[in-house]
Image 1 (cartoon, one colour):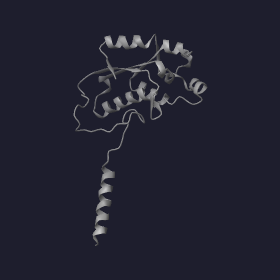
Image 2: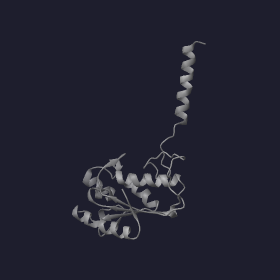
Image 3: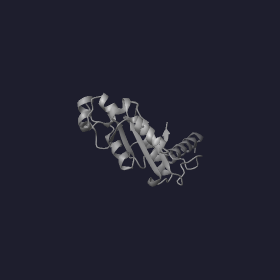
Image 4: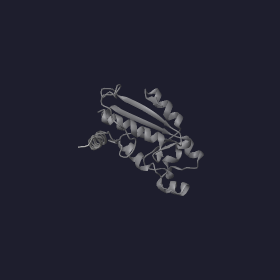
Length: 178
């Protein structure tokens, strides 16, 4: 066998092995959102013995993979906790949605009327709620944008303000996530 042919076979098997052994992005809990790669040997893993009381300030309009980036980050956190075997009863996640992000709380019909397309965040919001996340929307922000409660999707809870949600839960010991 020629040296060139041997090198071609070696290269072929090396590439095939790398492709087959490459770790894929996964979404183990929040299907389709917050993709992760789990590294079992990485330092500082989520600790299944701890209780996680976390609050997120969702206020930006930035998107990631077609949905609100803040919501996507919450999905990533829950996916990481899932692969690290942190049970749902050890996790309490609160969202305070306001500011430019307020439009994520619209019903599909209202979103279509306002933006001429369905609300791309609805499936993610549904999965977050089903995973135990409490999704509060600032009534000050909805009022400033002429959004009534009937315009909201069924996954969010109107709160007096994002400030009240953020302050109340931090006083209760919740950690504000960046």
